[in-house]
Image 1 (tube, protein in one colour):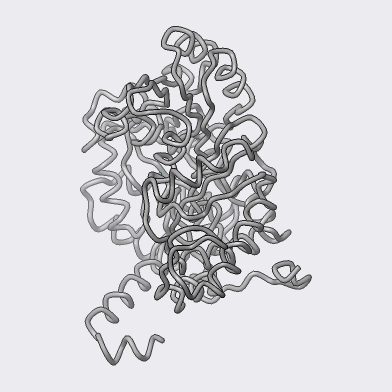
Image 2 (spheres, rainbow, N blue to C red):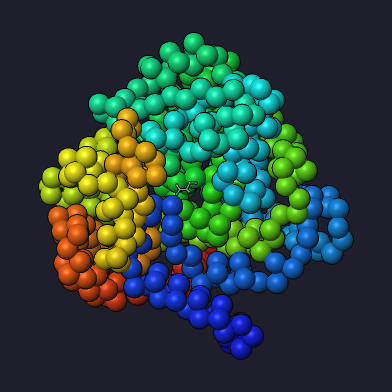
Length: 425
Ligand code: DSN
């Protein structure tokens, strides 16, 4: 396949090659990114991209579904198995669309939804003011306790009692602590709301049993397939039987047309990979690495929102360093360490140049890096932050990062062992 691309479109081929070199020659710490296996990559690049399959297995609007029906059913079964869910819809094109579908499956435009505010770690689609979710629904936003950086469940309950939302959303994109989904479920029940849980970031940790699953406590669980779960880019919804029909209708024909069958195929492969002891060990290592990185950063005097991490991500509040998140993210990028600038709770700065820096360990862990390397990365980060503006130091760090990267080659061809032929069972 690569040969065909090289011959037909050498320019794009070359750009892909450059991106591959960037991904292998840097340490990627964006917590929502990862590397997929060769099997997932191949499924994603397969002939399934040629097929339209509006509808669901056994009830499609186009013919020629002999194989797609089998693939989608297989993917659904694998998702249901690893998440212990009654029903799975794996057609959403992304996590954002999955969230929309969850809301529209349960409530109507104009109803009130309540989610975590974006600067406090939520997601745009949790009702943040620049997202259309805040125009289509009436939106109430809860926050973390700014002193602890953690949820104050009593305050969340008070807010829910005051506003009586129809949906309460649990889940986050920049919250470094374990979330108590049972309490969220109870608060929702007490105020007569539905509970939608968005576990896009921590899905891999949930599957591995490291964080408690929201499946027993939420009406609908929304996730992506590509972050800690290490599949292709996509969205998924899990729910109890009672919501299955509404969820399916909300996705198709409510919000989408034909599903991206090549993505569903790759999701099926990734879910088989996630159903292995190797994946559980991987997920445990993600958290160990994040903790090691956090501890070293704390030792170096960095301020971490909530004081550390329970999951795959860390949020540095750079205000005590008198440098903005954007400036540090850009300097780190020049040093071949890829992070993203991010708001922190009560951030006085604008989101376009906030005070925080978000980083996570899923991708570095896929490369086989462990605590020792996480600590080494913390030293690189310290050197960059302490030498902002000194390009020769940044160049030195870039060389050290390249050296470390070369010892942990990108698992472009990594294959999850399938000794027990788990996928075939
Ligand atoms: N963009 C994702 C993230 O980086 O967290 C959330 O959608």
